[in-house]
Structures are given as C-alpha cells and as structure tokens.
Length: 313
Image (cartoon, rainbow, N blue to C red; front, side, top):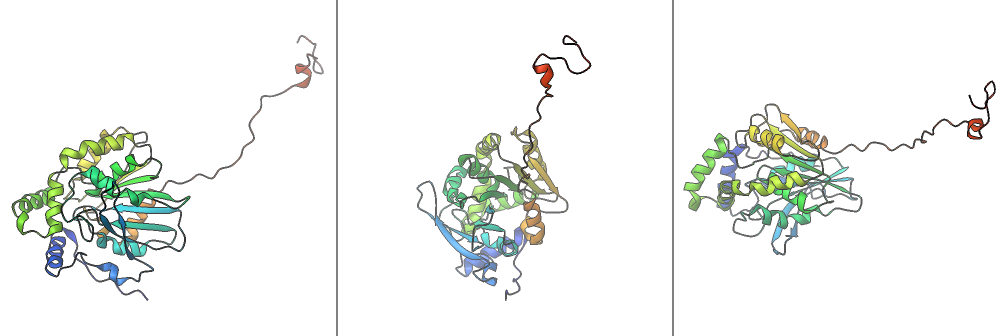
C-alpha cells in the first residue's frame, strides 16, 4: 500500500526555505517525497556523466518490468531537484517510463561546484537519452533546463523524438526571478549550495542563449512549449517571442496554460501528464492502397476500332 504523500514546500520562497532546512540537517535531497513510495514505483538511481567528466549524476526513475513505448526524460531547472517530480513520477501510467535528473552541481549529483556552461551540462546529461530497442524518447527541459534540453536534442540526432520546453527560462527575468537574483547575488556567501548555484546559473545564462537558439533552429523533430500565463519567474512573453522568431522545419507548438505559474509540476500530476501526452506524435495507421492505373483500352492499344467506331475515329 502506498502512503499518502507528505506535503512539501511549493513556490519560490518555500523552496528557498526547504534549501536552508536541508542544508541545516545535512541532507542533499530536498523534500524527499520519493520516500513515500516503494522502490517499485519511484526509485533513486545514478549514472556517470557524459563528456568524459566522470561525475556521478543522481536521478529519480520509474522502474518498469519491460521497456514501454515512450521514455520521458526530464531536465530540471534551478535549483535542480528531482524530488519535486516524485508525485508526477508516481502517477505515470505503466505504458510510459520517466527519469528526472538532479543536474550537475545539485542535490546528490557531482561536482560540488556550479557548472555554469550549458554546453557542458548538455554533454554531461547525454547518457539520459539512451533508450531500449524500439523505444522513443520525449525530452522535457524545465525552466533553466529548457536551453540545456535543446542542446541535448541537437547534439544527439535520432535519439529524441519530441522536445518539450516546460516553463522555459530564456534569460529574461520576471519580477520574482529578478528579485531573487538581485538579493541572492548580494548574499552568495551565506546561501546554501543549491540556492547559490541557482543564482549563479540564472545570472549568467543570457550570454549563452545563442547556442540554444541555434540548436532549436537546426532541429527537425516536433518542438512544444508549455507555459503558464501567470508565470512571474520566466515571462510567457519571452517564450512566445522565441517561438515566433525561431525558424524551424515545423512550427513550434505553443501551449498557453491559463492560470498556471512557473511551477507546473506543483499542480495536479494528472494535468501535467495530460499536457505532456499531447506532445507525443500520433502515429497514423498505415494502410495499403492499390495504385490507380490509367484507363486501358485493348482495341485502341492494338489500333483496332471499338464497336460502332471506324479505325481512325
């Protein structure tokens, strides 16, 4: 029997408080809601980072007896805490698989210092895209992770079937993120590690966005953007502008979520899962049709007259 999930801090300020509390108690996991579920539902895993970095990267995954048709890979934002996806992981249907990562420099992932280059982050997280034979991958980049996910998809052609930018943060701050970065930059020395790394990342992302925009323009796979219209951390206008200005083979599918804020995974899990499900390409059933041949007249082909006609009619 699965226990009722504990209530965890939600929103920016509550997440900040959770970071201080976790640091004070010596925990690397923030609001460990995965502990409310058996290992058969949600379990902790790890892998060695790509790009010859040698870092051990921590993640949460949904174990499955056999590989389902789709694997959903989630690259989280800043702070990067997979634990905040535990409820969503637990609600995932059996015909889907999900893995949510603690990015390098956060929670239980190495290294101890911040990794500020989004290209290095993308290389380090590339092993997440490994899939079973016949399995397709949906790559979800949340907030700061959106730009990283774009680079991952572009650098690994053929490994990603659908890219989702969820509450994507693209260097343009809203009132809440602007205040947090301003205050956090002045208090870096007293901030817990993960909050400190988040402030450093967010304040240094904008000059790197050209890499992500170039990657999006090169992609040939479906690209989706899901954004709350009440997002005061990453303005929806910035995401809409990026979608309109980026020339892609297929138009970017933009989903405006009414009344939602930056933390879409804080809402009911079934709503987020339903939104992600719409980003899975629908495969049209294949049917064979006999080719249409031009009308064929044997007498005409032999140069003979059809009944009631002369030969040169």
